[in-house]
Structure formats: structure tokens, C-alpha cells
Length: 437
Ligand code: C2E
Ligand code: CA
Ligand code: CA
Image (cartoon, rainbow, N blue to C red; front, side, top):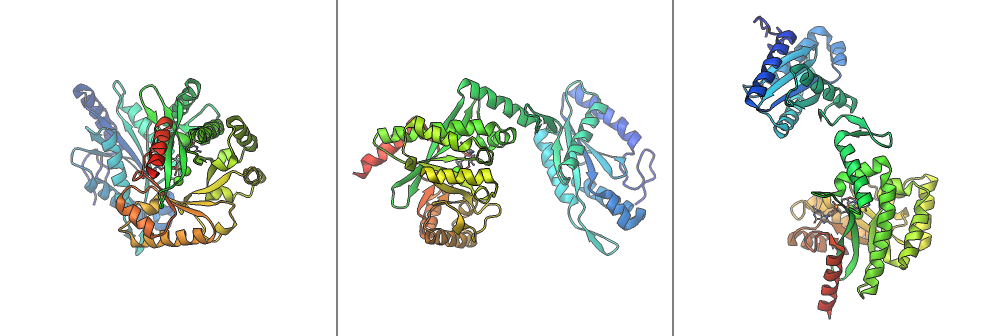
């Protein structure tokens, strides 16, 4: 195709850079005057120089034309397409709010990655994308610049991805690079630490024989109007090192709850999650000792959950910490087993007495027979190695039946109980023990 219309880029038929800039200014004026949203997607083909070098300039132009064609076909008629540079495109999408813009962005990324046949060679192009949403009073140049900066951040993170303007890295309190949203989370965490907004909820691990195996402590961060879940704040706490303080706090809280359960006549092990940053810190062993002493609780009533990779960490501090956990008589569990790079062969060398099978195997049950076979094999292996095997994330009666027939020892999941505050957990345990008699 060769587009000869004025103001058009001949190869792609998109608006050329200068007429594109005018179109962007008009789109912004239109959005301002109708108070409607406008999204800008700035796209850049990854490793285009390499493409040019391998296929020559004609080949490069061919790729540009094919990619442009895919963009045109994938976008609806009211989008405006610009060619900003050799391998850079911009889409102006009127009326698109953030969610719609990111959905369109993700769709384009997939669309572009379909294999492309050039000179008998098969390639899979990919691109980096930055998205910016028009803000009231903002002119078109500033809007485009934000989209471009977000695209550059997508490149820095390895390409083949979308970054929304505002989520680029910004330096946090501890000098670490955090996205803007993470910075807000960091601030929230500090506030919660200061104002007593942190709490633990507890979720039972129920044996297939009905006995309570343990209760797991799960951290919550409560802010005046909302609650942050650990999926959001634990990664930030890990990056900034704040997890060490949070972890020491949860060790003490968990140990105190174990003491309380014992005093209330429903003695149950309390399982506490430990993250990498804690275990690589020299202050870990003393903090554990301090928690046991302050709470006045037997070590046998505490269990620590680590992911498999932590057990395999050969650094001296980690190994010393693991040894002192064992020496203290505190139990250890392997958390999230089977996700990431788990190795069945190293299982026999780990000093853990409990194996928690990751929810990803359980949530596809009972339909997925392969997952079922894996659960069954892992349950058998764990048992042979003398471990208690737990299925995580059982939500339905069908899943419960499946993991029972795979012969796991105990189950954790919404099917039995959701995580609940301390008082509710205590009441739940009391209720169950009275029913047993
Ligand atoms: P985890 O250790 O694997 O904890 C289990 C997670 O699965 C919890 O999520 C729990 O609420 C959720 N869950 C339990 N049953 C079900 C179910 O049937 N269906 C579904 N969909 N989910 C279920 P939560 O509380 O959001 O915690 C997420 C992760 O955050 C935890 O995963 C753990 O890795 C981390 N975490 C939580 N508290 C702490 C803490 O005090 N310290 C550290 N280092 N990490 C923590
Ligand atoms: Ca856990
Ligand atoms: Ca887990």
C-alpha cells in the first residue's frame, strides 16, 4: 500500500507526525469542550533496529506496514492513528476511560504478537505501550509526552507490556524505585503502623478427620475508609524493608493469640507467614525468641510458613535462622508448594513437617484430571516423607471430595471458613469443640 493523501504517512496510511499533532490538539479541544474522556496510546515496536538489520530497510518497512494494518483492523472507527516516528505509533481514542484504554492496550499487544511471515522467515513482533488519560486543562503536547514517557518505562521494564502514565517508577522513602501506586501503599502502611491499623485474621486448617490442624494468621491493613489486602501491601513492604517490622509484629501477635487459645481451652497451633526479607535478616532469630518469651507460649504451638525457595537459600544468615527455628522447637511448613519452580527431589532435604499444596492445583479440581494426579502424587510423596499435607484454597464440596480422595491430611479454604478476626476465630473454635462432645 502507498498512501498519497496529503498529511498521511505513505507506508501506513496513518496521519503523519505533523498532521497528527494537529489532530491531537483538536481531539483535546473536543474532549475539553464536551467534558468527555480521551486516551492516548503510544506504541513502539520492540527491537525494531534488529528487524531492520536482519531484513533490510525494505523488510523493516514491510513489518511497519503489516503492524499498522493490524492496528487499524483492531481499532474502532473513531480512533485516530498517527505515525510518530520510524516504529512509533499513537492511537487517540475518544471516550475511553482508564479501564477501556488498558483493555484495548492489552488487546493490541496480543494482536501484534501473532506470527508474521516475511521473506520466508517467521517472526513474532512485540511492542511496548504507554497509556495516558487526558486530564482537565492539560494540553495535547503534555498529554502525548506523558504517554511517551509511560512507553519508555514499558521498554525499561523489558518491553512487551503496557504502562499507564502515573505508574512509572518514583523513588520511595528508602531510596527504592516504586511505582506511584506503590508509594501510596507505602504511605498507607506507615500510617497503619503508627495508628494501630494493622491486624491479623485467622483461617483454620481442618483435618479430613475433622480435627483442627492449625489456624493461619493473615495480615490486614485497615485504613479509615478501606482495607488493603496482603497481595497489595506485602510486596511493597518487602521492597522497602518494612516487612521486617511487620513480620516481627505478626510473630508477637500470633504467639499471643496462641497463648490465648490455650488459656481459653482450645489450644491450637498458630501458623505465621515469614517472608524472605525477614529470614535474610540477622534480627529474625532474636525476634522469634522474644515473641515466644513475651507471649509465654510453648514453641510447639507455633508454626512458621516459608516458601520452598527460602529453604534452598544457601546464604549463611538464612541457614542459621532456619537452624534456630528448628532448635527452638518451632514447626515449619512449606507454603505455596508447586507454584514457581518446585522440586520434588529436594523435598526430602527440607526440615519442614508440613507441606501446603498451592491453590492453583486445587482451584481446577475436580475437572482437571492432570492436576488431580499431581495432587495425589504430591500427597503420597509428602506422606512418605513424614509430612502433613494440606490442600490450600478448597472452596466447594466437590473440591473437598477430590482432595480427600487424593488423600491429603487437611484442608484450608473458604469451604470450611474464611479468614476471620481474632474474636470470631476463638468463637468458631469453641463452637466446634463443644459439638465434638
Ligand atoms: P498464603 O500464605 O498462601 O495465604 C493464603 C491466602 O489464600 C490468604 O490470602 C487466604 O485468605 C486465601 N484463601 C484461603 N482460602 C481460600 C479459598 O478457598 N479461596 C481463595 N480464593 N483464597 C483463599 P490473603 O490473606 O489475601 O494473603 C495473601 C498472601 O499474603 C498470603 O498467601 C501470604 O503469602 C501473604 N501474607 C499474609 N499475611 C502475611 C504476613 O503476616 N506475613 C507475610 N510475610 N506474608 C503474609
Ligand atoms: Ca501461608
Ligand atoms: Ca499458601
